[in-house]
Length: 147
Length: 147
DNA sequence: GGATTTCTTGACACTAGGTATCACTAAGCT
DNA sequence: AGCTTAGTGATACCTAGTGTCAAGAAATCC
Picture (cartoon, rainbow over the protein chains, first blue to last red):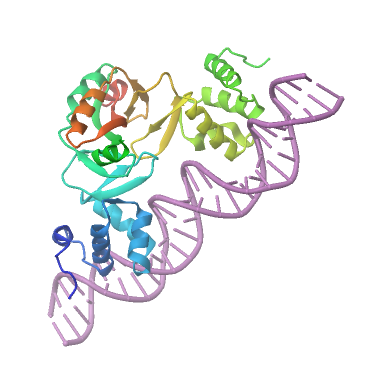
């Protein structure tokens, strides 16, 4: 009777993925996946806690976020003020464009700075393992609105 | 009688800078600058609190770190585990190379990704304001030691 | 279908990192 | 030396997140 998979193909896919990996599909996990799917784009743990309400304990929300992040179903976004938010993760390594005006987040497509970084780091004798990059700016809508 | 400016030209410069900007040179601020200068390279607020001991209150340590960061005398380093550390800041915008093995931090010289970012972001309609980049890897010493 | 096993949960206490309040202190000016 | 105001420290508080553990519920086995 509920909205099944009408609004949430990602929820279904995530449940499949977790089930296949040996995780139990518990009521709190299902509710959290639904709540995440209903979030605007990215969310903080606190927002998710309020979204699911008292039906799911606080610790479980954090545990589930961590688990989903480790399984690459979610990715972290570091907002400009330093707080951590989460959003559905498409693929592997990628970066984010964060609009400082409306908060919207887009994936940054086509970034390939690894080779540049490796070259620059070599000047200091470093071998690069990884990097963390977030880009802040203003999205097309906000620029149009403010112009 | 104390070690005056023998070990700490940066301390002296920082005191000048603060004084010129209208900040009072209080005992806690002097002690904190000395303690920071005696830190290995980068430090967490907690390490600094312990370094100065009970002579300076916890709130004052955080306030002073924030003030020095706003004045660009310190810069933030986001370590791989997400914790924030601080170190003397040389110039304006720059990035860090963090050794994941020994924790050492170097400034990344010559990074100029702004134009690349601006071009990539434009594909999503974003105008880039700024970015945050930290690079993780292993320094020459650690690689030599582990080889 | 029912018992079993093991994963998961929720409540709670706790930690780390940082901020707000506010009476009191002391820097710097004159 | 006295005044004014910035700065301090104690304390309480806050956010974000983790560790513990008894109780509950998936999935499996029979």
